[in-house]
Image (cartoon, rainbow, N blue to C red; front, side, top):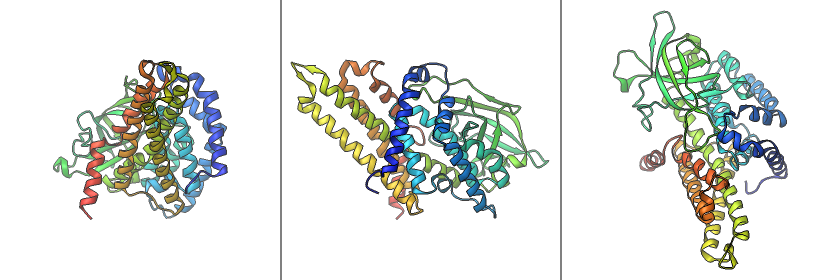
Amino acid sequence: MIEWSEEQLAFQAAVRRFIEAEIVPNLEELEHGDTPPYEVLRKLYDTFGIAEMQRARFKSLMKQDGAEKAAAPTEEREGSGETLAMQLILTLELSRYCPGMVTAMGVSVGLTSAAILGRGTRAQKERWALPLLTFEKIGAWAITEPGSGSDAFGGMRASARRDGEGGYILNGNKTFITNGPFADTIVFICKLDDGSEPKDRKLLSFVLDRGTPGLTQSKPLRKMGLHSSPTGELHLQDVHASADQLLGESEDAYGRSGAKQTFGMERAGVVSMALGIVGRCLELCVEYAREREQFGRPIGEFQLIQLKLAKMEVARMNLQNLLFRQIELAQHSQRMSFAEASACKLYAAQTAMEVALEAVQLFGGNGYMAEYQVEQLCRDAKVLQIYGGTDEIQITQIARDLLSR
């Protein structure tokens, strides 16, 4: 794929009109008020018939799943190249103004539902995945803990203990959980407490419902950026989970490989977010360089400003080409390897941060003021280098892959 099709451009224009009418006028409240993003996102789904398309896709998946064979989460999410293209267009257009909404939407409709679709039983998919896909319910994927950080598996302390009656008792704390304060459905990842060494224990995932006794969901945390994406903590104290809440209803269904596939999907998705941020920064900077005058001339006539703009355009082109590669792979029923997804995230996150910082610099003192959007985009871009695995973790994954060949 080398360019957007006419249909894709038409969809992009329609999405942009919706955002300019429904999100931009309410951006202040979404970013700095107490309004969660979910109702606006549901309106977006209704406007473009996305919920109905998801129901049709789910019905098709269930037909293919007659033998209840688990498929990879990324394959479940991506489907055809055309479907992926529409999803990525939606992501990059939202990221031009409100990257936080992308995170809130993506974790719910993407990561949480994908984990269930990829590893769950047919009954679990029908019970939990469909309401997530249609955005009727909000989902959270809970793996990070206060003491674990980048060592998500080795540092994990959350546990599941067999209760002797076929169920489990869950305990543990999770933090930095997107949608945590408002989630209706939570995929809770923990280790089986079977008396073995912690490093050797199985990784299990349970699907929990809001309001479960012993489950506490914190209020939204205050943070540097992505203000329109509610982030919170989860506290579990002696939470009872029945056997049918264990993902796949098997202790071997969702181990580290399942978690890695979900991480890989999240990392590949950062490219479209970065493209939205970079594209908007470039647009704002070009406009500002034409209008802002210093020393009696528009600043766009100065070579140092031109260099900044040129580098931003190169970054935009590179990110768009990475996006096209993802779509092209999906058109051929392929997907990025874990290492390639890590490489994409590393480049995209660093590029978005570099461009956003340069945008603030180009705007000068105005760029540091909240009334100019580059300030928000710069704050929002930073988290791309942190969540889904830090830059340092991406480097490790890429290097390990290279050295193992």
